[in-house]
Every structure is written in C-alpha cells, then in structure tokens.
Image: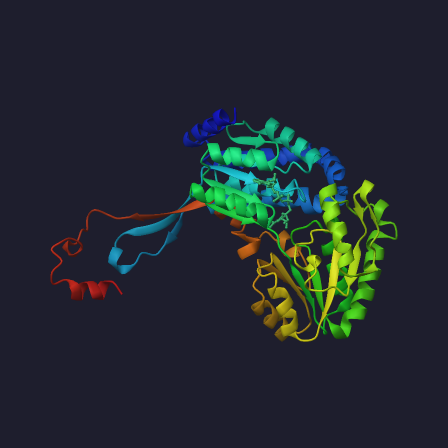
Length: 456
Ligand code: NAD
C-alpha cells in the first residue's frame, strides 16, 4: 500500500506539477485556510494531549505556523529567483547563478511536545521549495495526530502530501527501507536522531536533524534577578518543561543564588498558583513513561519549591532542585520536564566546566548587564542558538536560523532558512559560444606561465 503511494508521489513530483510559483503559493494558502478551519479542533486536541490552553497553543503552535506561512507567501517569488553570482577571470565571459531546485520527495518526522508546530512548520518550507512530502507525526500525541491527519487528507491529494500514522519504530524504518527519499527532516531525541542518520547514510540521503540536549542558563552576579527569574520561569515551565529549548538547568553566581531562588518561587506562584494541577496555564506530562522518568529525578537534589506529583493526572509540580550533584542523572540526561536544578558557581571557568559535560546544547542563555561578560559567555559556549537576558524566544523570530550543532542537531530552518533547507542549490554556469580561447585546450606545453597569471 505504502509502496504504491510513494511511487505515485515520485511520479507526481517528476511531472513537475509542484514546481511553479503559482502552485506553491496556492498550496500555502490552502494550508492556511485549513489551519483556520481546524483551529478549534486543534485547540481541543492539544488540550487533550498536553492540557495546553488555546492561548499557549496559539503562541507556540498555530500562530507561529501561520506567521511563517504569511512571510513565506510574501517572499516566495523572491526566494525562488535564481541568485546571480560573479564569475572568476578564467571563466569569463561566462555568467553564473545559483538555482533553487526542490529536493524531491521528502520525509518529515515530528515529536509529540509541539505536535502541530513541529510537523507543519517544516511542511511550510517543504511546500514553498516545491517538494512532495510524507508527514509522520508522533504517535504519543494521538488527538493532535488525528486532527492533522484529517486536515491534511482533506486539503491535499495524497500523491502530493501523504500523511502516515503509526509507531515510529515500525513505520519509519519501513518507509525508509522501501523508498529512497530525497531528503529527511527529523525533529526528536538525539538517540532516535542517530538511528535516522544511520538509515539515511545507507542511501546517502541528506538530513536535517533537530535534536535535544541540555540547554544551560547562566545568571551572572550583575543580572537583573527579578527579570531573569520571570523569564527563566516561563521558558522552563511552559508546556511543563517539555520544550526543546527550555532552560535545562541554571548556573547562578553564588552571590545572587538565594535572591534568584526567592524571585523564581514568587514568579512560579504568580504564573501557576498554589494548585498548578488545576491551573489553566499549566500543562501535563505526555505519558506514564515520561512521568516515571521525571519523577525519578526528584531524588537527585533537595526540593526547595514544588515536588508534588500525581501519576493518575500525569502531573508534576513546577519544581526547583537545590544541592544537586553534577554527577546525578538529572545533570547527565536531558530533563525535558518541569524540574529545574539550580547550581551555584564561583568563577566563570567553574560554570564552563559544568556546561562542557554536556556539550553542544540546542540553546544557551546568559543573564547579565555587562557587555563584556555577555561577549565572553557567547564566545565561549558553543550552542545551536542563544539569548541574552532571555530564554527560548529566539526561535520565534523567523529571521534567525533555528537548529542545533553537534549532539543537538545538524542544519537549521525557519523563514527563508526553511526554504533553503528544502531546496538544493544548483550551481549553473552559462558560457557563450562566440569566444572559445585556444588556451583551454591541448597542447598545454608552454602555457604554465599564462595559467599562473589567470588562475591564482
Ligand atoms: P523521539 O525521538 O522519541 O520521537 C520523535 C519521532 O521519531 C516520532 O515521530 C517517533 O514516532 C519517531 N521514532 C521514534 N522511535 C523511532 C525509531 N526507532 N526509528 C524511527 N523513528 C522513530 O522524540 P520525542 O520523545 O517525541 O521528543 C522529545 C525529544 O525531541 C527531546 O529530546 C527534545 O529535545 C527533542 N526536540 C527537539 C526539537 C528541536 O527543534 N530541536 C523540538 C522538539 C523536541
């Protein structure tokens, strides 16, 4: 069944139907209309899966995608244009340009934490670049998966965009084993990312891997502590910490540690109240497996805020951990939940040694009011992206590339970067026939001096 569908997609792509500007633009507009049509269903599904409020769902899921569509439609014609580049002396009077060619039939695989946005946002780039697309959402957000399947099936023909459901461990190897995709865009854990990379390598398929990791947050002695606590608090505990760019842990200068913890407690109380289990703004953990893993971390330090859990409701209170050993599991694995270790540091070098234990984070955050410190921190911690006096929001600016490095991923997307990611850059040189100097052809003997002058 899948074989037949994929071969049909290949034929559809090869027919050239997806290539024109007008086709791509129309599909983006259809996608936008479909999202608006299913807006309420998506809110309900995201609430069923993760207890996300419509407001949070708009900011982090639907709204983000719709604004991506808006700027893509606006800029598409310009992005599709071939880019003229200069031509070097030895090739004159040729002219040169870079053509943006669709990759072909591409596979997009998404995780459960932002189940809508992380599947549909890459789809925007894939459509814009003229590809046919197979979509595979996470099976762990089943309500959102069901709405998206209906929405996509109703909006696009399955020879153009095919929505595939099922367990990743079964479905993805089957798809990748039977069909040679032209590109794979994967978002999820580093462990599964390695499996995808290995399968892709067998067929030399290019990949973008958007992975996870432990994103550190540094609070310097000269930081505005109240603001830092508020911004770290919201970035860490929205989606109950199940966000790829959530601050994983905080390294706070020892001189401001108590003040920071005090401010953070105040902020958390204001955001989620004293009964976060029934608070409108607070999400739940996705499933029992994740709940058990997270609950296990609570013993890795002293709970100074939160710490209550309820497995039947998949609830873990926003929790601050103090006195955490850097050897404890909570400091060795990506937390991906509402537990925040706060670790004091004395010197910058001490803090850097902690960060180096989990290199190449997806994001790095530094809170400071000193420009020199800011520069020093930014240039000494390799990371996918970074914020100064902020956490997580860099990913909502579509003018910035979003992606990891090393363990946190390969490649990037958002805005024009998405279009580029899903396009092959074909280098083209056009040479007129009226000039064909003999120097380029044998016999070469005696031409060395001339070659040295032209090629340098
Ligand atoms: P996951 O790796 O378990 O699953 C992601 C996708 O891969 C799902 O669609 C799943 O069905 C599929 N899959 C699972 N096992 C597979 C296998 N053996 N072979 C092929 N496919 C398989 O990730 P998750 O638990 O859904 O998501 C959490 C992780 O994703 C965290 O590490 C988080 O940091 C990361 N993440 C990264 C970003 C980013 O943009 N960089 C965004 C969100 C989440």
